[in-house]
Length: 175
Image (cartoon, rainbow, N blue to C red):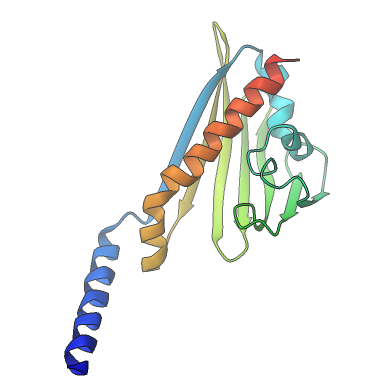
């Protein structure tokens, strides 16, 4: 009886592992919003890590998170490290790796115990203001658990990005 249960559990493990090998090994998420403001007005909010305190969807979950800024205040090399006891915020850091004024900001992200990712903000002028696109990319590797978790990133990260963009729109448009 115990042998059958162990064989059954092993079989389930093998099936789950095989299925995970065909799941996507990377995640790409994008959200966008149109903000009634010129790119030059919005750009400082995404090019300066200190300004994210005004609209970050994660910092609104934990206003007491410890934030440490290093490097220049804005642009390439600007860094933010955070530490929170709230599991939804966690521990990590970001660094701006590319900055094209009023067009693009690219970031490297590292999450303690959860891996690395990249993120970006693209600003595109429109007749109604600026289209701001916030993107996220990460590679999941061969870890079967991460590949299953990758199926949830769209919901987890996507909803946070939507909330963050709504916050930023409100901050910018309210002056």
